Every structure is written in C-alpha cells, then in structure tokens.
Length: 220
Ligand code: ADP
Ligand code: NI
Image 1: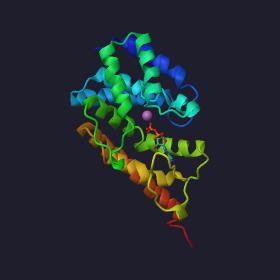
Image 2 (image 1 turned 180 degrees about the vertical axis):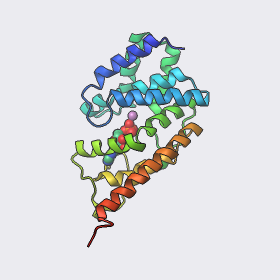
Image 3 (image 1 turned 180 degrees about the horizontal axis):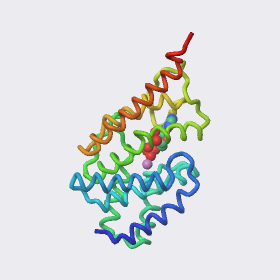
Image 4 (image 1 turned 120 degrees about the horizontal axis):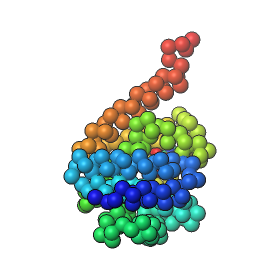
C-alpha cells in the first residue's frame, strides 16, 4: 500500500498543473478518476494504488499539450509525470506501471484499438471514461462545447462520426459520435455495470432535451 501522505502529495502537485483548466480536465476530474480507479481496482483484483495514482496524473500533460501540441500520453508528458512521481518518492516499479497506464489510456476500441494488456490500464480507461458519462459527463460535454464556442445543438448537422482530429460542432452530437460508444466498450464488469447506469442517465436527458426542443405537449 502506498503511503497515504504520498497520494496527498501527488494530488497537491497535480493541482498546480491543472489549476487553470476550463475544459473538464481540472483537478476534480483527476480526483474523481482516481477515486473510481481505486474502487474498480478493488472490485476487479487490480492494484488499487497504481490505479489511483494513474487517475491522478493521467491528464497532467494537458496544459503542455495545449501549449506545445505534444500529446498528453506521449513521451514528453510521461517524462513530466515520471519526474513528479520521483519527487514524491514513489517506487520505480510503480512509476513504470503508472506510465504504462497513462501511455495507453487514449486508445479507443471503436477506432480499432485492442484492449490494453494490463488490468490496471483497463481500469484507468474505464475510470476515465465513466467520468465522461452520466450527469457529470453531460455537464462536461456542455462545458467543453462552451469553451470551444460550439453550439448546444445543430439539428441540421445530423450525427457525425468522431475522430481525434475532427471535433463535432455541437454538444448533442457528441453523445452519439462518442459517449454512447464509450459506454458500450468498458473492459471490467464493474465498469460495464456503472456505464449501463450512466448511459441511462444520458438517454433520459436526451429524451427530455428533444421533447423540450420540439415543444412536445404544447405545440399549437
Ligand atoms: P477525456 O479523455 O479525459 O475524456 P476529452 O478531451 O476527450 O478527454 O474530453 C473531455 C470532456 O469533454 C469529456 O467529458 C468529453 O466528453 C467532452 N468532449 C470532448 N470532445 C467534445 C466535443 N467535441 N463536444 C462536446 N464535448 C466534448
Ligand atoms: Ni481524463
């Protein structure tokens, strides 16, 4: 078990990196993913410390990605994470496993990627994606759309296919192009169960959204 003070120290360090985020990758996202990572790991016999630490640091490279255009799962970001974890005194074997989780967390099955080999990598993917689903996922989607000056809903656009280099122009489309696909490709049984519940929250939301959009019940 990693010393709880070390986890606190990692959280404190991560906070300084993610302080200015307004696109859904703030310290609270990292803390939710870390907590979910530990929970899923305990249910699935993965290493809870690796999963919690990976959750805390997985988006550390986001500010650098924005500034320099280097991926937040690439070598530069991994080096940044390695330095942080060394500074806090995490054992090198653990650091190696955490870095592997971060390196693999942006690979998507619906874009053709195979599931990662290690259970901890699978847990991080599930935990990160669960935070894009449900009530929090809905809120993050509209935060993202607002931060990128996208519309709430453009019915004339139809449902487009998502790719990492092509952003949709409206928030509602994002549910179809990505979020429902994520919900259907969880790796762990715990992730699958939670994703099913969160998917229903999104379906109910979209149903109400569309009813209100169409003015159902009071249209003349
Ligand atoms: P992560 O891998 O941490 O989920 P993303 O950058 O893919 O990071 O997304 C961050 C948040 O913003 C997520 O909740 C995601 O669903 C949302 N998001 C990403 N792209 C879009 C988009 N084109 N429109 C609306 N929301 C988006
Ligand atoms: Ni994330």
